[in-house]
Amino acid sequence: MTDSPIKILVVEDEMIIGAKVSMFLTELGYEVTGIIPRAEEALMHLDESKPDIALLDIQLKGEMDGIALAMLLQTNYQIPVIFLTANSDDATFSRAKEAKPYAFLTKPFKKLDLQRALELTISLMANQSHNDIAEQHAEETPYILSDRIFVRNKDKMVKIMFEAILYIEAERNYCRIVTSTKEYLLTMPMKSLEDQLPPTLFQRIHRSNIVNLAQIDAVDDSAVIVGQKALPLSKSHREDLLMRIRTV
Image (cartoon, rainbow, N blue to C red; front, side, top):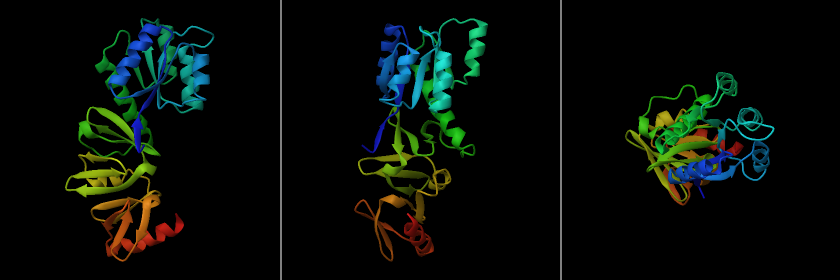
C-alpha cells in the first residue's frame, strides 16, 4: 500500500471506555493497534506494532501510571501522547503537564473532541520538524515530518510515506501528489510544498513537476520517465537532475 491509516495505541484500563474510543477512532479512519489495560503491557506491545500516536489514561492500574508511560514513550520511542483524563487533583495534573502531552481529553468526550485532538497532535508533530510552514488552506493543510506527509483524504487524515510518492504536479494554485495507486489534490501552490520537502529525496524537473529521485525509471533529453509516465524535463533543471541521480 502507498498510504495507510494513522496508527493509534489506546492504553485504558476501563475496557468499556477503551472499546468506545476504539470505535470512534475506526469511524474517523484511524487504525487501532491495540486496546491495552496496563502500562507494562503497552511497552511489550511496541515490539509488535509501533503506533504513530498513543492515547493514554492518566490513572492506570499497576506499578506504572499513564504519566510515567508517557515519559517513556516520548523520550525513548518518540511517540506523541494524548492524555485521557477524569477529574484529577492538582498534583496529578502538574505531573501530567511535565510529561508534555500533545493534548488532554476530559472524560466523557465526544467523537468530535477526539478528532480535533488528533488533528492538533498531527499539526504539532509537523511543526516540530518545520517551524516555518507557510500559510495554507486550513482544511487542506498537509503535515510534513521527516519521512512522511499527512494529508486529508475526504473526511479523514491519511499518511503517505515519501518513498511511495512518484511525483508532484502543479495545477495553478493547487498541487497533486501522485502515488502508484492514488492521487491527492492539495489546495496549496507547489512551491509552498516544495519548500517543506526534504531536498535529498525530491528534485524539481520542470515548473510543473517535482519527482521522487528514487522512483525515476529513465531520463532522456526532454523527459523523465516515472511510473510509466513521461514528465517534461526543462533545460534549466536537466543538469541538476543528472548530477543528483548520479549520487542516488
